[in-house]
Length: 125
Image (cartoon, rainbow, N blue to C red):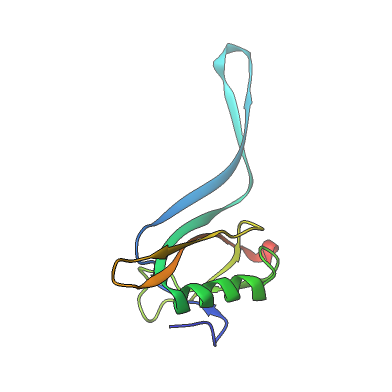
């Protein structure tokens, strides 16, 4: 795995969650009636947590820096995707990235990094 092909294809070692964010405008009227309008298509948010050795942590960090944080879009291989599934076009959701350094008892060192990715739809590219 790695980012030589410009695809975020690291598999989270610990935790990952997927959230669907919908955009619905709800107008409430007297008498309890509501009107609902879809403002724009919904999208998914991916929260990925990695606890990896130092070299993988550096690769993920460099991938983020190379895209100038939340600026540039890229392809993401979903952890549950089949081989024939197309990558998902995403962008980092946050304009900052933190990494936590750890040292194991067996002298292994590494990083804990959590990234949030926003699925891009046609108008977001």
